[in-house]
Image (cartoon, rainbow, N blue to C red):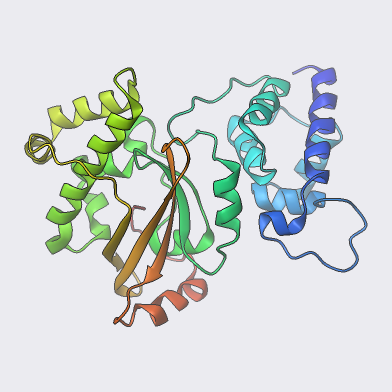
Length: 286
């Protein structure tokens, strides 16, 4: 990475930082702000970086940022896809594929996610790959595991890894399996015949899971839009929640948020999530 590109990267980051208001990313705007937009320490906090490291980036110094850090900065600064691609170009890093956990998160989805601080929420792809979670979603479901390839998809792991099923009571597994298969058929159809990502996943599941093969042969098709689920939490026990979905315009991404089911005592339990945090969580995220 050349010194010239280091300098351009710093200027670009500063220009994007200065255009964002704190309220745009879920931060409280204090009365004595001396700079337009976000402060450097706020961007560092949102991106999961140290303040010193981010300061070095804006000064056009420091080491070449990793692809993971660039993706985190793109999300923190609410970059469009074109801006994200330009950021990777300045850093001499390959632009991530538009699939899998490195996919660009729609800025509108991130904006809505930041406005749900008291509700577990996350953005996933149509193939059930987690892209970003808020802290309460991590506390409820567990952190994004970071698996490569098809294993990044919770749907894929549901049929290939018994540990993924610990999130739901055993008596609910059949219902979840049917819903996953019907949703995958709908998502694959929406992607069209030229898509390879969904086709590869389906082929591997047909080859490795007899349960998936049997359900796929039934040809059920239905997007998961609004579900009532029972979640087994390692600390709080059995929780009954409503899982609501908001789809992006192209259907490739979904914002999921979780509310307590009416007529249950799950509301008090969900209130405890912010207290418990992510300590001792072993559940595989849905």
